[in-house]
Amino acid sequence: MRGIRGAICARANTREAIAEATQTLLREIAQRNRLRRADIVSVLFTMTPDLNAEYPAYAARDMGWLEVPMLGAMETPVPGAPRRAIRALVLARGTAPTRHVYLGRASQMRPDLAEPGDAERWDGVEAAGVRGQLGRLLVIGLGLIGGSLAAAARQSGLFAEVVGSDVDPDVRTEASRRGLIDSVAESEAAGMGEADLIVLAAPLQALPELVRKAARAARDGAIVTDVGSLKAPVVAAMDELPPTVRAVGGHPMAGSERRGVGAADASLFEGPPWALVPTRRTDGDALERVQQMVIGLGARPVVLSAAEHDQAVTFTSHLPALLACALARVAGAALGALPAVAALVGPAFRDATRVAAADVRLTAELLGADPDRLAQVGAVLTRELGRLVTAAQRRDALDALLSEARDSRLRLVPT
Image (cartoon, rainbow, N blue to C red; front, top):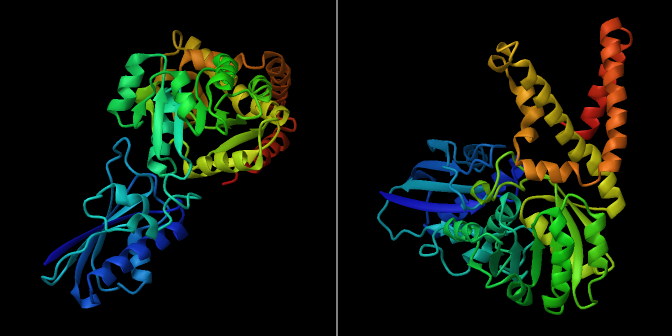
């Protein structure tokens, strides 16, 4: 009896991508080990928690493994583990030498078992083509967003090296200990001088000064991008970079109520949009490379202007944070007279107030990013709340208002 191990990373969390990856892996295992169908005793599959669109066993049956007993399980979500990974343990009769199969990014799991060329045999790195083709990445700021970005970048295989920098030495130590980065930059300036792509993941108010520092320290041809929630001031600073330094504004629409480097999660960018804002220092190659990074991290790039971005995020990011905090405050104030409020908290309240549990400094930065526009939209929201309350009191046009709300939600967040 032989136990043949193998692993592969699906390109996406879809039925088609999981089936394609599973069948590619099983065919390679069978071919290398010269397995006949009758030789296969059973197969155990595991998948990382970011894959749930299909069972690998279904893909195996679709390729004719109908009489083979199969079982699936979820992998332990270990920080730093490869994303969208499918593992297989094939038990087979026979005593011939065993050849294990680790394809694409999965070859990083067991480099001692992966065979020459396996890392290139499966396009598990989205839009990458060649491993490490984007060169050296420097991430400045290793909190939730920066730490998660660094971890996902390491797993993507797009970069030859992921370097980190943070003003807090404890954060730098923790990022290294957790394997979020390959190394720590000696200094921000030194790191900028050696990086091919620089991501500024510092607080919003610090970004313009970091852009100016990049103007002095970045090497010719380097690309600077950021993750700030407001683009106009950052893009204005990027526009003043020397022609030798390229720049693309950025903003991933992702986050968590958890905070700091300890909350960094390589899967944070799986699926959400990532705004990309061209500047005077954006050329076609720079935009393409930043898009490659975004896709490789699992997000969806959306290219738009700084004005479009800043107007839109007032509705999709700043206003939800304002609502979450207001709702939490109102419900919290009711606790003294009505303790049952806490006992009856359900999914609706948890989802609606999640942002209120985030780092106070980050939420304050979010709400203070564009206070004038937030005040304008907040006034519109106040009027809309009044309309709904009045309609509920009078039962006047309430159904029509709720139908409009449902239709708007479905347009904004398709099921």
